[in-house]
Image (cartoon, rainbow, N blue to C red; front, top):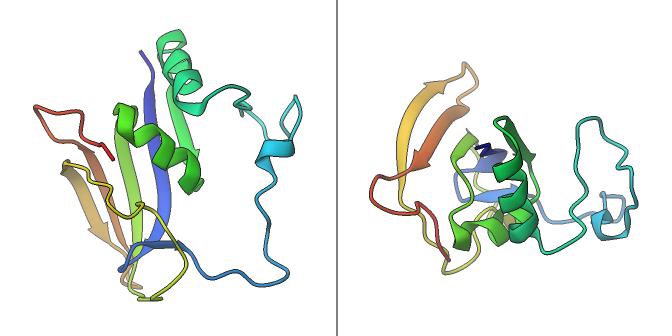
Length: 136
């Protein structure tokens, strides 16, 4: 069975995307058509959790999610995320799109961590034993 791995940059206060600017990338993924413009990518055409669960069953490979807070939040209630690799930047932005939705909870276990010379902490987590590891 495949493993879903989230790879994301966040600030100390959990912001994964700063407040938008007029020239900032807009969320257009719901308007894309096959084939997606990125190599080794899958366009989710049905309900996300159902589609990702099916992809996990069909492969032994790692399924990586870069960014995409909406997708991450939609997979958490079903415990579909197997690993979290977070680059935690030594910044507090106070506002912006957060990785975790208000009220979301996740029981995670730290499996590795290192700190770069710029103070970014690269941490890897897996769901804690005895539970799905993530639920909203």
